[in-house]
Length: 277
Image (tube, rainbow, N blue to C red):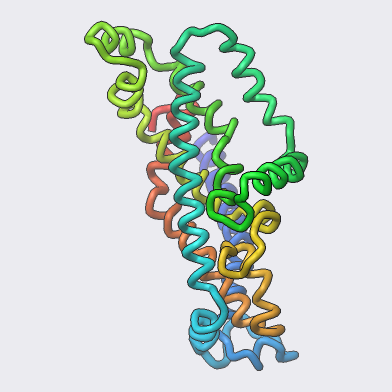
């Protein structure tokens, strides 16, 4: 009886997973279908899931017009810089909070965690004024710097470092290694999966960030792809095929990055949760 019950729940689980996957994939498939149609077909009163005429014209015109390639380059550069700097700052801060003993450590960690309570929108005005005073408006530095401190990543790394036996650090210290050498040679090799997971999550978040580039960028050439997509109406008019093509081109790099590092991301989150993958 228990065997039949388990089979029944398995079937229900599979059906539920298929339904959820279909609901998730439907908008993506519709965007792809729209991008592969001629423009006249996108405004047709007749509904068809698949294009009646297949064409890559929307992708060709999107890449040939406007600054889509420039926006993609800007997004990649900004996301890469944000990821590298965020990982460096977060690892150093997390190691200090977790393994080093210094006066005011708990207070500083508490202050850092208070950032959880502050929505980014509340910081827009002071951040913009600071970037303006530094002369960083409409620059890569102005886009990157306000995004490189992540309390979430610091917290995840600290919790992971707390679980690593102190014997490792003490043994390295006895061999003459300083704090940076211990972090680089002992803690980083152990934390490889969680570092990769946080790096991919940070890269995707930076790539998709719209609000801050919208505030700090003032020229078309400095736009990232999420911000640039809002300009396609000006460049193309109401051309839905080209709009969908631009959106798909903007989403493709992060989707490929996640697919390529999916296993590391999964293993990293399992490691952060204390489970073994």
